[in-house]
Length: 191
Image (tube, rainbow, N blue to C red; front, side):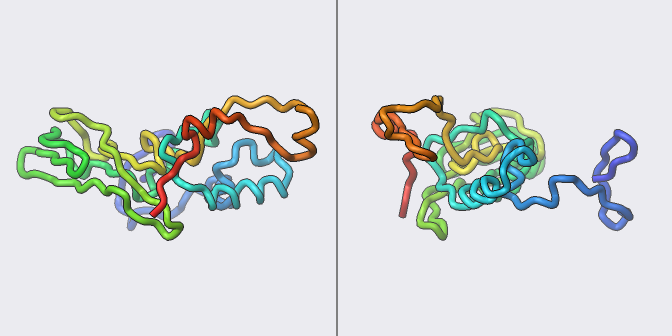
């Protein structure tokens, strides 16, 4: 991509002399996903990026309500989303395959189901397009349980209240409702 004033164009890399540096490039992937990083205590930021590294893909994950803007970039670069390589229309879609047809040929995309990760969790992709839809090159065809509509999803959005409750929440302890357990808010697949 080439930026000329406010116009952004796609060009070959051999024509690029300088690369624009972003201020967020000095942070790790986990740290770049922490909102308001500059206003947090350093120890809390270290703990937060370590927790993101240890995150387990959930069955019912939510997109972050408050984010940094890097969630979509991380989700698209996770290699778990399926993006269309061509423009065309959806000829066939089910839980195993997506077939896109353009003027010249058919393109077949295999959807991964219950692929084991190094942490013994599983990755499952879900198609988000319907039969007969027109797609453009780069459109999202399927996303995984690590992403939600192309954006990385590492957890659930919960409604919380910070208050004292009969002394059970001394210092950093947190009490949660039984509803979270009964309704499988934080369930995940393990192999």
